[in-house]
Every structure is written in C-alpha cells, then in structure tokens.
Image 1: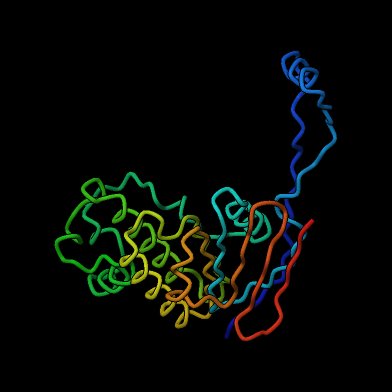
Image 2: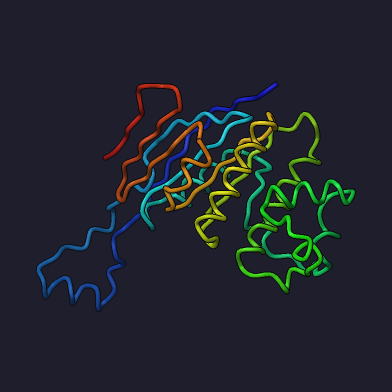
Length: 231
C-alpha cells in the first residue's frame, strides 16, 4: 500500500544590498537606488504531492534553486533521509561490514548502489574514490529505508544525484534506484541534479524543472497538463 502527502513550498529572500558607506557611494556614482525592501522569489508558492513508490526528479541550471526546493520539502516532511547525513562517516571498516544484517543483504544493497565488485566490498571508505563513496552513501540510505518501521512513510532527498559519477555509471545507478523504488511502496525518492541525461534511467513520476529566476514547471507522468508558475 502506498501513501501520499500534500505539501506547499515557497522561498523568498531579500536581495537589497545593505546601505553601507561603499554601497551608497557606488549607487550614487551610477545613479542607482538602494531599496532595502526588495524581495526576490527563488521558489514561488508551489503545491506538491509526494507519494510512496514514486521518483521525483528536480533539474535545471546550476544556481536556479534545486537545493532550495529540497530544503523546502525537508522543512515540510519530518524524518527525511538525506544524502548529506550519510556521506561522511567515522566508520572505516570494510564496506561489506557496514551494510546489511547478512552478507547476502549487504551484497544486494551494494549491488543496487553500483558497488557489486568483490574487491570494492572489501575496501574501507577511506580507500574509495569520490564516486564510490557517493555510491556507498546511496547504499546506506537504501539500508536505512529497508530497516525503517514497516508503517513509516520514507522520503529520500538526494541532492546533486549522480554528479560525481561518470555518465554510464550514473545511468546504471539511476536505473537501479528506479527498480528499487518500484518494489518499495513506502519510499518516495527525490533526486536533484543538473544532469538531465538521467531522466531516461530514472523514469520520474514527477519532473520538476527549475529555471533561473522565480519560475517553476511541474510535469506528472501520464498527465497531459503541466503546472507552471512564475513571477
């Protein structure tokens, strides 16, 4: 049985420079005004429906506000599992010792994260490349989701998804994530990245495009209409 949760996100920030002596001097030189009340819309008020068993993919140019959307979701949903919480760990045992309750479970989870090589499984995190450590973080998230209370609603937030991986590996890992979520009705997996090439592998149920500026576009798979907001 899946679950769904409706949330609303919005982010506005003040953009006026503080009227310091230098700011006022430059403004005077170029005939500019200093408006202390101006506010910039980073993410317009947006209604979003999260569902278990679905993948949400957030993409757009660097600096457009993808991470801001993720933070907005995290503020609305308690207990989100986030990549940044698991990427850095003091545990430097071989990774086969860190994942799963049995060797079989560990091997399955590590293979989903693209770490199926036996030699890699025997390495410590300090011996892994940046891309391998990223995939270890994914394995840790999958394990946490697997061992969470059976009635829990699980939301995974993956910022810069696949950014440190070569494109072939990123595609394979994205495909594995899609298959895993299809078998995990309690999990809503939300990935954000500039790499639009992962859309085909993730086959997102919801595609969010965040352009530069205050606009946002939301497309749900199987629906002809798309939501678009902007100011």
